[in-house]
Amino acid sequence: MEIIDSIQKMQETSNRLRREGKRIAFVPTMGFLHAGHLSLMQAAKKNGDVLAISIFVNPAQFGPNEDLDSYPKALESDLAKAKAVGVDIVFTPTKDQIYPDGFETYVQLERLPHHLCGLSRPVFFQGVTTVVTKLFNIVKPHVAIFGEKDFQQLAIIRRMVNDLNMDIEIIGGTLVRESDGLAMSSRNSYLSDTERKEALRLSQSLTKAQEMVADGERNSAALSAMVSAHIGDCPMAEIDYISVCDPDTLTEVETLTGPTLMALAVTIGTTRLIDNTVLIPS
Amino acid sequence: MEIIDSIQKMQETSNRLRREGKRIAFVPTMGFLHAGHLSLMQAAKKNGDVLAISIFVNPAQFGPNEDLDSYPKALESDLAKAKAVGVDIVFTPTKDQIYPDGFETYVQLERLPHHLCGLSRPVFFQGVTTVVTKLFNIVKPHVAIFGEKDFQQLAIIRRMVNDLNMDIEIIGGTLVRESDGLAMSSRNSYLSDTERKEALRLSQSLTKAQEMVADGERNSAALSAMVSAHIGDCPMAEIDYISVCDPDTLTEVETLTGPTLMALAVTIGTTRLIDNTVLIPS
Image 1 (spheres, each protein chain N blue to C red):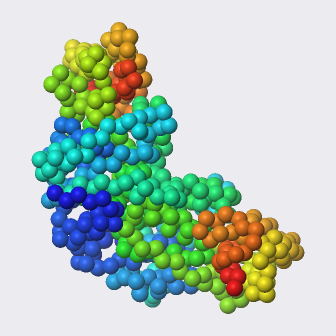
Image 2 (image 1 turned 135 degrees about the horizontal axis):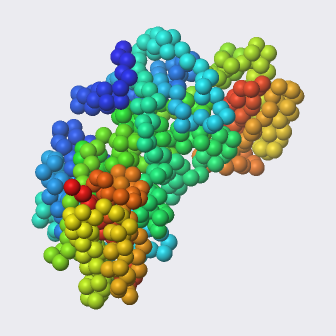
Image 3 (image 1 turned 135 degrees about the vertical axis):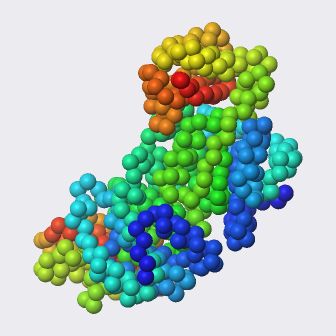
């Protein structure tokens, strides 16, 4: 496994791999790797000849009152996990390389960011689309994999790749959960034991929503009310949003007529957690 | 010479050329080709194995009160000129292909557009950087050439390519003038005979500025005053801006201490013309 920390070296490596006719699969991450990330890498391994990942905590996607400075890091352990799952190249650029003095170019979408997480995190998606564009131009992958836990991010990346005619296949990786249902996330590491128990309310709500839809519920407000009550019962939980929306446009729907996204963002203590599921009325 | 009007076919062609180890040189244009464009193509021919050009009048870079509908077109004549200068591929996408329903992604810079032409044309540079990013992803050139007449555009493209880590060499083509000094531009075709004579005030002012600097003038205000008087003398001329600025940041300078850009935008009748020169105090 090769560790590359220079943009120039990474781009030269990708150029060489392409000249050799190799298909590059890419998983960008912010490190502190968990089973969710590793499942993306396993999917990537099946989709290319060479598996490259990046580890970069991207300052541009953190708001001024967010957790940029405390975001968890564990590079040595990340490298061991990456090696174990068959990663060929780990790209670890520094902030000064990615955002040198004078940097001023941004990639942004007009509509998709104005829903869900984009409403409480106004700079987030511009930070994501800008850094992902840069990483794509550096790593030059044929295929890239993003997790479905960050559903809005995946939708935005798909739209960006399409709109800007990037010649890259985007694959979504199925959401991975802990054995008790909690959606895997690097930020779960912030939770105290008590908070960790209360955090299950997110996944439990979504399971209940699936059951209600299987039993015939088609009214979004009824589903949202159930979730709101289940999470609101917990004094340390603060709901950011409960959304029942079109999975492509992310606009709210009143009635389920086809596959519908239910997405949540809840702060447990001081930790903001998200989760989602696609409800399929049959 | 191959004419390609589909994005998919263009991208497949570029992929094939790259697999064959060919170096792709690219000149994006809005058509109505003149000697300025052709000089860019001649420079491109020396810098690659295959010369591709695009002809696309980009709606996203025209403001609501600008000349999108009247922008001059002459495709047959353009194709003949391109063939004569050795173009291998002409890419002619339609507006619906470049901006399909649902398009919402833009590339924009924070600072460089807030000078010169960007002040009177607020959507212009975002339109340019977005379409050029798309064209670069479709045509996948190794090198691309942009004319120095559009000095701010060239500076913005260079910054964008650098900031987004695009693996493309950007070359500036020297400004080409008519025999009487008028900077070549597709929009010169709008000028009546009288307006065409008055339009020479732009290039004459810049020549005079060069002479003043050669004679020792270092004060920007003195240079601007000369230009303002020479152009202001003409009742059909309206000055948009006269700028004496740093060629890299485009910020105004009071005193010439090194290579300095003098850039003008003047409306003659109803036609907006630009011109520029780099003053070099010795």
